[in-house]
Length: 211
Ligand code: GAR
Image (cartoon, rainbow, N blue to C red; front, side):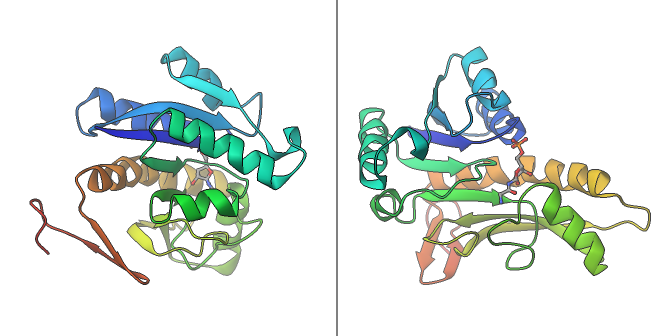
């Protein structure tokens, strides 16, 4: 069975969606580890309430990026992690970890990338920018993580309409519902070996491995 490590920085509603999908039998995986750069993240409490090992780990606790990377890699290996999921994680994953887990790190982003992505584009900033631009649609993207913010190839994207009277909060809530659908779905596709990556092109294979 696929073993996951979920990185989080905030309340953890996407982590909750993964836990629920596993409970309902829609996601054939186990979450071995939840790591947060924020000690007070609600997601850590949520993990602990679900008997999942939850750690506060941040680069600031280490003397160098190398020490941080090797501690992370040691933990990931110890827990037999096959896929890393960034579920509202607002820090960069160190390059050595990205290299080791090449094509095995997924991130959820609350917009249709490549629009409204990049450094500083997280949470409410994204929805404010979408409304300021006057977009008629937004959505959510699950993508492969590469060495930069939000630049890896998309795996799943789903649109959400922008309504005339939207506020950043209302749009965020609507996009979040979509995130909770597509993140567990993308992880399940990975668990089934149905994500084929060639350069920037990600193909979802039919069940049984055919295109
Ligand atoms: C989610 O909307 C996620 O897409 C976003 O943070 C929120 C975390 O919510 N991530 C980013 O903006 C990354 N650039 P959650 O803690 O309730 O899952």
